Length: 351
Image (cartoon, rainbow, N blue to C red; front, top):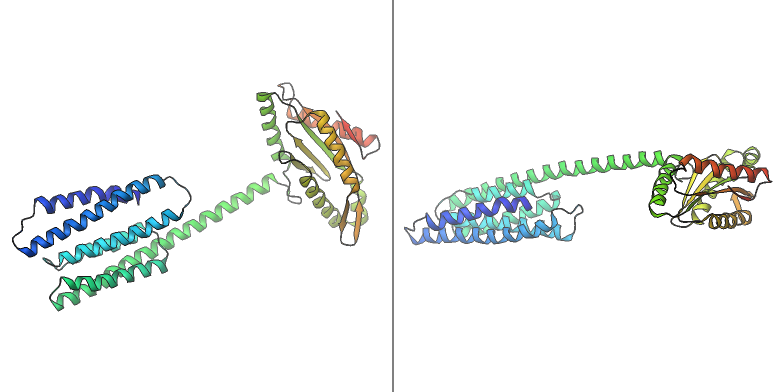
């Protein structure tokens, strides 16, 4: 609509100029014809100027809104009405219906309207055209001919509108399908399939971002590595489906007991890791200890099986210095976790 207004404004000016300064009025009929055409183009010019300013503000929006839909239907109504008005005045001196044909085609080409709505618009326009042209046509034969030709005009416009709408609709559906597939593939690449937690690949990216942020703002952050104690016994005793269910419940439990700014990730098997930005080592230790106690108190239910589990924790500090790498952070947390296992499990150790 924005570019339509850019094209239409100079064309309307040219038409008004030609009819104003190059047309001679030999008879009252020709004068009425010229004045009617000028008035029609002038009203259309005023509308197109308003449409230009309205769509200039909206043309960069990526999501449609009510104003866009309203402008579309108002523009169709005004353009069709202008085409009918110009054809009606033209009948004073000629029998052609080219302006009405052009407006039907232009509306079909430019405005993407659902076929049912488009059908209603074209039928309504034809009814108006059918009745209004009778005001200036005195010959019944010409009137009948133009009414029949009008059916062709609206039929062509509706056909173009329906084809383009279907083509655009198909493209949008395909685009959304491709976007959904891309999101699914991205999710599969960065999230654990069993627990839906971020996997090691995504967690590595988040750690790198946090290290960069720490270097810029000079704050401390903590990573906590934890492992479910004796998880192999659960799998061996109750089977892997029960073990998988426990892992899902455990992952949900972790997500529900961390801050919004924290990130919980599954490293693999029964091992998980938590990134806690802007947290001191003491704060990380206190949080891990609280989490350890909550895990001890919780019962995990799978069908008729009710289990109590414990977990061991290793806490390490990220300093955000150039000397500390990503692997250093993992190594320190893993080392602390190993110590916790060696000292009897179900405990928190600091590296």
